[in-house]
Amino acid sequence: MSETVGRAARTFRRHDSFEEIDEARFASTTTTFEATAEASDADGRIDFAVTVRVPTLSAAVDGDVGDAVAEGWAETFELRVADVGGVVRGDHDFDPAVEQRDGELVVEYAYTDINEQRGVEDAAAIINYVEGTYVQGIVPGYEYVDPVAGLLDQAKRAGQ
Figure 1: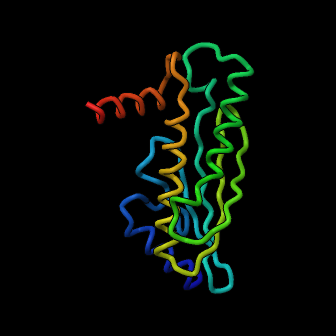
Figure 2 (figure 1 turned 135 degrees about the vertical axis):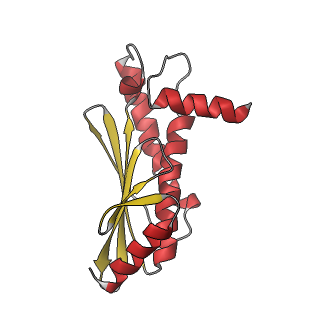
């Protein structure tokens, strides 16, 4: 492991939002969804890769969702997660990849930073942003299954 990746790994280990999966890959502990962040060397800088997996609308609902609704929801979600720039501290140009796989939307961000603290904080902010964006896009009138049902219950309890 290079010195730069080692610094990033130590910062991830100390951060409350992550737990170590392996040497330079960490799982988010703050989201209901599966989310990981990893660091790799980039000539003295650090490449960060953040991946968040969320269920499609059809996979999150108990029952049928029309094709037009499901496609429109996925397109809107993809547009909204691209707007992450306002929640990070670093100056990054984000062009997230969003791919549908087996009932999930897999959202992937990549960015480079020289400051490991800022890079790790940005990874946590990105993950929280994707979860918040997902929750804001929940369509009323459907009966949701876990993990989305659990998120809705948490939101209701927090609002009371």
